[in-house]
Image (cartoon, rainbow, N blue to C red; front, top):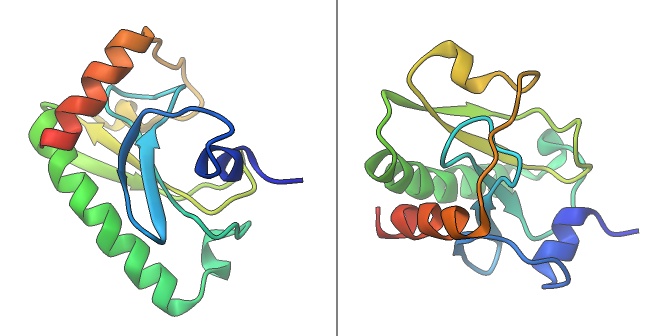
Amino acid sequence: MPSIFTRIINGEIPCYKIAEDDRFIAFLDITPVAEGHTLVIPKNEVDQYFDLDDDSIQAINLFAKKIAVNLRNAIPCKRIGVAIIGLEVPHAHIHLVPLNTMKDINFSGERLKFTPEQFIEIAEKIKQG
């Protein structure tokens, strides 16, 4: 059964897309820990991040770097945090999270809620970087 991320890649489930190329896609997390919380995933469904081949790990990080620069320019923050957890969806992915404090990257805490219009506005700000 395809992961929810594969279903997003295939267009079966909508997302708030930030960027896409032939190998990767970045979109807003719909249960964010901070405004602008973005997921970067390979289009190839691989369960665990470190099961990606070396070329893919290098390429996804370079792709994520471009997103992180735009994210930092779009959302006021001190840093862009990076997390690779992999427990919530069996599909390799990187979390990019705007940070002002250590609490901003607490995945066990309460998640933020935004309207579809707010998600669209946030995505557009990040795209424009």
